[in-house]
Image 1: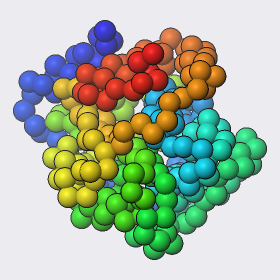
Image 2: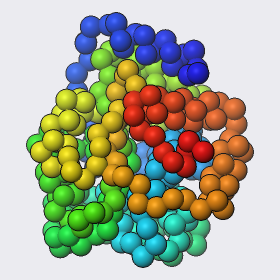
Image 3: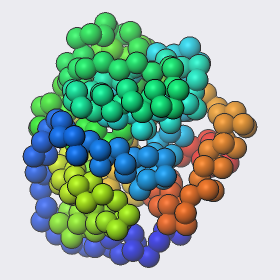
Length: 293
């Protein structure tokens, strides 16, 4: 059963008239050192984003195989990518980001964690010229696409994903969907303001305001990704939207045990967030052979 505060937001979004519309991010490329630092702090494995990162790591791990080359679009400081890479040591990951400050932070994070199966490259995720057609085995992107300036840029990104992905490759894209009301947007942005850097709260608010409408996702998926993965959103309210290919591997018992141990070590409020995310995506149709065990 979802938590009561989340149920309240679900009811608000279900019955309220739409009053909030997309506002692009004020900074499309995050280069400010303080912003990057706050984003990194919130994204640590013990930070406020820990349950979200664990959820995405499990889903990404189902669509990559040993020996794959996997492209991460908008890798940022590599908090999420580092977790996925450690879970999949026999996979080679390439993180792409347009921010030099983010890439510098990523290099430090990966070195500190002794992660050797990740390289990073500076690049525009809407123009992946450094990658040949059908050259990567899987593509992932986690909570990045709202940084794109407009719908045309989102469609270009989807077209590039289709171009560089090998036939039968893995795909996991996830981002915020645009909510109907400013009240719901502010609720999620400020939900844990006492547990996260103030700059991260502001960035979170801007991110939710910059999220693309579910209808925009649906059109881009229809044009470019329909045969590569299935489009789904959280039940009732498109707080998050995904496109995921069919699982290409089943996680080992040891990996599942490690993931459960990470989840069980979280504080109670993080476990509640994780459970809410699993529940609302499951009700929206995104099921996982490994999460459902």
